[in-house]
Length: 466
Image (cartoon, rainbow, N blue to C red; front, side, top):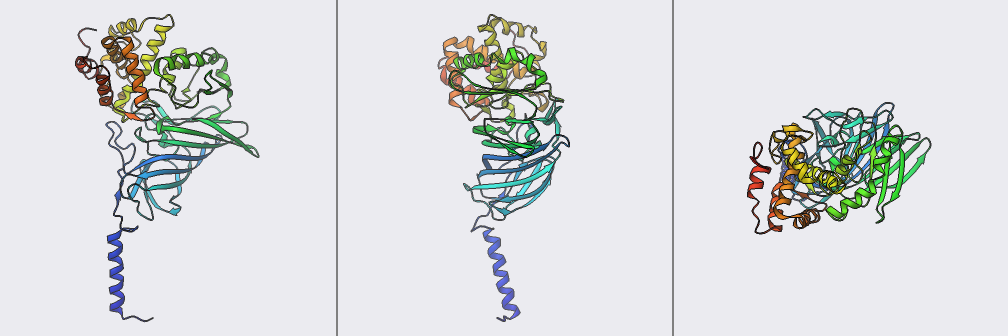
């Protein structure tokens, strides 16, 4: 049908105006989600505008060439109308992105993968994002000089994510405030094993390759996700209460690790007595020779150790399952809530197992006779000086001293009520320092904690008296 040119121009103009006014999806006028959550120490970590509920990661790794191929299927809910959103991912070639099954435009800038869906997303809408990527995953160097991300081993690799290393192996909303369920499937060559969080659901064989599928039902922060690939001696059993245990150990470390790992059931029973019911559906450990990492990490369900652990370290990382993994900080300034509880767990374990009392340990630390000397007074535990300091002595030892001061103030019975109640009240959630101090004050009405907060939690320098 023929139309005069003027009429065609008028129709075209009206169509363009309608699209401009309506956006791409029936009236949605979204804006881009934020590229970062303004964390006090890692402002680019995480992203605004959505909340992830599930990650489905399908990975393949070739240790010989250190090449990783991945497909990440991310299920999320829009928390506002969105025209675009970001994911955290560093390195890799992104081979394609779809949103709700339709190709989406995307671009890269630093750690940001910005996705522009074909149709804008409504607030409250649940949507699926698929990212296909490949390349050599990176080992990242933290502000304090430690290594994280994807770390090679002699026969494979281990992924460690605290604080922002997870973006080195999968696209995510990489901030502790956004927790999700996970399914992680890893295909590896030969007789290698792939270990991850949660429960092993299946092992399938396809020629010379095996695929391990791990499922984590309970919410997990991205920094607690892990994959360990290599030759492992695997032990599987159940605790007396039926909780499954999966322990994977590098054969070269097996003999040295055996005496301490044998105490895992004892430590778990002790921890439940002190901290309340275990918050997850399985437990265990990974012991591997990780190049460049000299620290253990409380990866959910299954902490990672770069060498044969001692008993204190095993106690510390298992205590984190309650404090850090289940009750996760809202941002990285709240890191002391993780490390203070795990450190104080070590003090309590010694107290209950013929070692020094927690009071004696407290007194030694106050005098500078602990492992970290007077560095414990470098800054307040609730106010680390910078990103380089969030894993320093004040966060651990002085944070534990705050907990001991609370115990002194309220007595043992009330203290353990506070500890167990805190773990229960924020189970599988996030909490801040303000949440904690408010909770303590409500649980112990009539007690004045002002001096503890002022001098021990937020104060500069060493308090004048212990």
